[in-house]
Image (cartoon, chains in turn yellow, red):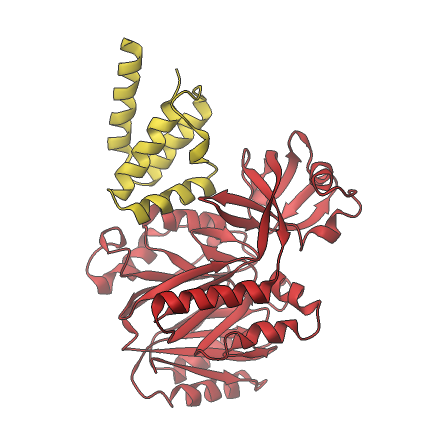
Length: 82
Length: 370
């Protein structure tokens, strides 16, 4: 699969920032400081299980595991159905 | 006037605390919060106890590796900034103890939130700001800041306590008590606009170093770009491994986030590894940095923030000890830097690292009030 990291990053930013651009920028910096360079992951980036696990752990730490997990599962189902 | 500065160079902690209290008593309005930065030359417990007796409002602070106060450079002194209630509407303070046993924030965050009537996660991030001072020898800053940042998007800024480069023990202060192996937090609701300034004096070079093997706990990078870290770092600079430490102050590395460098300063070469003053995580891509003029850049940053805020009524400045040491290499330069703050009620200290979203090095990180 490809693109899962980008889906997770977008979901983390969306669910934490709730449309606030200032908070969204802050979340991108927090992710960078946690070792996730948001600009590195595109829609066609091959999935790395270590990065996906890390992003899911970050979603848990941010207290947004449930909505992020839903979007993750939905993306997986959509890709597998293709 | 919305803030008052008090300074003491008295070498007795009892007399120094008394002098600070007398200085703060000249305030023309009630104080909401006092921030104190004190040399490690004072006995921290005596000083905190005395300040607790003599300052009747909440206070927070830490020991330093040198102090600043509105244009003055101090060594072995104490500086305090009294923030008026017309500047700070509401404040709470909490300590995070036993950092070495793991960082537990639930209870301290409850203490911080109590006067505000709701958890930090529900407070407006544009109307609240935090202060954080951490034991500068704990190596716990990254985890503390990460956990704080996980819990809330309210920005906490501050510094790692110093001990005048003795590297023996550093202390943080809150409400009459000195703590080591601890951090102290303050949550503020300013009554005026405010800005956080993070200024560093570096240009970003093209050379990249990717940390391919690290010992996170010891802030040690074993390999950059798949090579022994010291060798790769030296190659990027076009120098030898033997000469590499001579370049550390001028050429640290930076994690670039949204075009902004978050400086990671190397401390020493150990065998073939490089030890840093803050964490570098495995896989992190770092850019090589090259030093520019600290005084000029800080002046520009202050001019910019003054323009944005309209006026400045108080500044808290967390200034990396490495910048202090770099400025001291040129006679008069540290004083020139301090003079930039002469026009403002301001205090600052030379830190063992700054806190802004994470743990960073070689910045002046400031909380500036209109």
